[in-house]
Image (cartoon, rainbow, N blue to C red; front, side, top):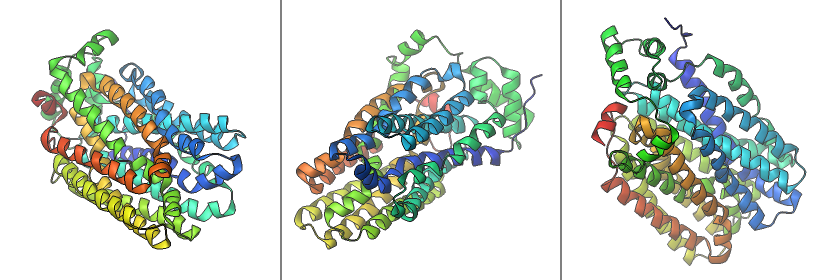
Length: 447
């Protein structure tokens, strides 16, 4: 009989909370560092915008790696993610040219996108159905906590001019996680796919401590009913099949529409946006950026409380609908107001509300929805396809964010993202199913 090292569920949750924390930290920390980086390297607005967009273009690395997720294994994906983090941070902070910044940020982006998928897929595959939403959303909470912490550290350290320190200070986390990852069990669903039933049974017994032997066997039987992984060509053919096409289409929509809300651009450019609108105090601009991510963190706590109570679909409708209305109103106000300190404060208030709605809806439940609507047989390929399209769309969107603002003004920019918020609301209302409280196998059968 296969032996499995017993790992308490709190260790697994804590481990992936650290994973979410570093994802959010690396994404957001550039917000305060960007003006210093631009000054030190003499970057144009185009170069700075491109540098910020690289966090998404780096997702191409992640999607190529994740394409072989079922062959590599979930744990090995985690190791690859952590190595990318460590190398990406060191290259970025030790580099003395724009090219080194480019490569380092690209690797950081690969780590963030790969981690956001590898970590949440693992969590969804080991979580009991009744708490799966909360467990995966805890990862998102840690992500927003990392963003908030990054802005606080920006506020404290960047005043010294040492932007490298705000990146290097986080290195201890991926290094620690690399060694802690050896204790993680493999995904029981992936083991069942590969026919390793004994080991899958032992891991299920370890994870589902309150389950009876009959319940364990029933769960194992459900997992084993899924056919063993096909070859790459056979897997590709599934994406066009009637059975799985709808699931992959929904995953692509969730991926792309979440990017088009502009959240990744907002958290990276909040300090610059507040200054452009007229906020005179640089310290208040930095503090405002920190408060934006703080609102994001608090709103995600609400999502954790609600995700398994009222469901993913209702939260998405609430978040996208509220975001659409807020962004539309903000676009109108920004159009009417001249550049002034008052306009900067109006922008800050608008960002608070926009980010709160995005956190409660799209960002709060996106990973739960993705891992639930994609059946096991096409989860890897679906995430690769949807994610690949999303990172291309997201890269161009984020890299052009400040450029569009320079050319047409922030009112036009927020009018654009309000439109995408409306599209997302219609999608969540009409197309997306409710998956609350259902096993992954039940969701697959319904779809």
